[in-house]
Image (cartoon, rainbow, N blue to C red; front, top):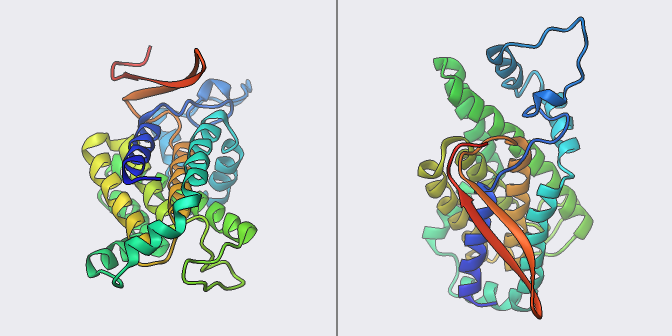
Length: 278
């Protein structure tokens, strides 16, 4: 797996972030799917938003609802792409990490390792929500609430997979709690989760820098000899899929990814639509 292929993987992750995450029946973004009851009047948009943007008071209802929405075609496509990229990277895993970490930890990448820590990402999410709540800025509050929800789903799934796979780190260390198991990368999943939420709420002007920081934090895990390339790639896909589940219905730019048969094989077709949703 070459660095050109890695650049292609980054492009694919970007396309997965901005493509539409359609609302599923029963999701918050699909009000028509909610069961109608004669006695219950629909909430006004402001009241509905206030109900959703309570990431602490409604932590468990939000968390359980997000997990129920997670199994979807959307998640299958994102995780499938991440899985295929991870499999493609397996033969080069040791080479990539050895090459990236040769010479010891670079202080430039040490910052990325700190930025991608799950506690830092959760702290930034809580800080965003608190800033919005204290200033009365509804958009900031909503973004912060979704960041918290995305980090909760991402963190639980990341550590569940770590405990299931029990892959040792490149340096060989691990513990029975899964804190240092290698697959998938928690730094990668956490930062790409945040980048996806920011992009889908605030657009590319915020999403592009956030994605570059996520790529930087992910690369730091290779440079610090903490992860293999396949760990980082699947971690990115896991974070993106989790955030897309939380932010269903958000995003103005829509990128459709469609498999298509061609003579002698298959192809993947991309289409971009930046106009209003019909």
